Image (cartoon, rainbow, N blue to C red):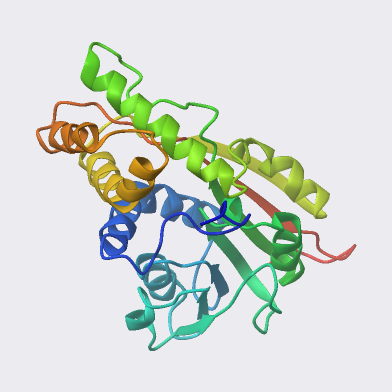
Length: 274
């Protein structure tokens, strides 16, 4: 078997642990994402495009917010984990954001979370999303920046934390092999401005510990187990020991900072914002 192709997704959504991982991502990051939606003014009648939806929680929240007068389009390369969300106000569609035409717009909100960092042609995908906005519409991109805080356990007090950090470092190496930009999150404000958006802002969310971090760690390590062993990153005994440590609550696990950046498509001169 040769080296992985750039853009080849490391965390297979067809694996049995993928559902648990998507639930853990929702548990960790939905509150921050929904806070940004509220701040941007998402409300009745809005048309929204959720890019790379993964699970159903974000499309469902948006549909409840925009109401019967609004509409939510949820797209992904693999729609299997959120097809059940299809229904009143939600349209589910298979789409590769970097290669396929955007769904019919324009949109009041376009949102992608933990998507572009895995896409080979990130700039083309971002331009496609920005171009699908109506004047005055918002683009919200949320992506990780593992290099801002690369440790799994910042409070290193013994071999258990050292092992956790060793495995996190191995995870980063596997992602880098697939072309993941491990410092992408910090570049988002500049990229939104380069796409012609205005009123650009950004912040970061950084969970230090909690059940969601443990749930995500367990699902991720189980998904990566074979690759961690095949690449000589860790032994089977080390992987098992780490999973036991997580299950026993011995570790204060973190996740990489999630950078949320937003920008608006400019209104034509003399047009009042609705």
